Length: 385
Image (cartoon, rainbow, N blue to C red; front, side, top):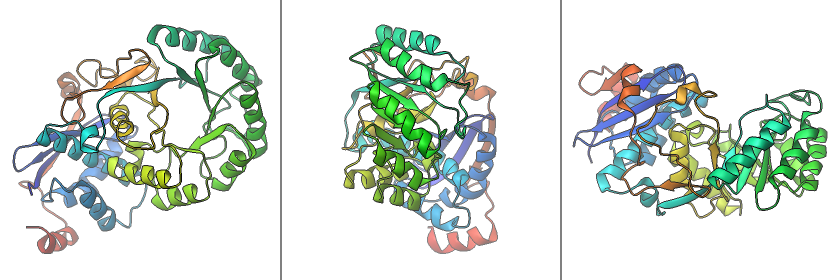
């Protein structure tokens, strides 16, 4: 039972990495969720690290549950975003300790994972979007692509008038047969408008309609799903297990899309995948940037029995997400024949770029330096060796 002795964070405003060290010298790298990472790091060291230090580094699920209970007064998104850093670092450590990739620890396989080319842009014309998606499918072998409709949480106000009606048939026709087609509304429509847009999708051979209405309105999402034959997908923003259980129980969506980092790591994401499996629903997680979230999702899809048809792979480069520049050594997301590769390297199979780490803000919590709060000290005295 090697105990966790040290937790280090390296972050900027947008992204943060966690390095965990156990008393046997084993280390692992994980990531807190992207965006406002500087705030999440504070939560990590204040409300996650105190419970993790001294705990068994092998019992990942047990430790995640412990922290959820000990921080029960703070059951929100930031707690989960911070938990993701610990969870994913411990999975990497476990893989390195056992000499296996995380996918193998989960009972899965290494090798290619089919990806879809995922556009993040709305400030782009139908012609521009069609050109780049068609080109990427030809050059990199993608057999599926997703583009954006509506406006994010737009309340039926489009990005500009008529864009949705124009881009759906234009891009669908440009991609042609042999390419699976997906669209994402990012909670942009009312039920009535979403159903009307869904009819357009059905008429143009599009099989995936993501977040058609405000994601927090489960009954509204179900109304759209029930009215359409196109698959309705959702869940990327959700972290609360009670919400997930209800979403799946009422079949609000046809496809669940948990985000590993928003959820709080692999353990909690696996819970969602298992709930969906029991309900006969596929899991196609959200992975909208090229940080560690996409690699974690690759390993997840390579292991779960109800994996969706493809991995979300952002096509936006460093010009769109400047903060993702130089995060890793090499090209972990190189596309070949429309697939990315889960490699045999132990853990996540990626190396955080030392040059990036040198530019990041640093913070450490360790058993040697940490002075627990009175509440934490009382618990630790009775619970930890």
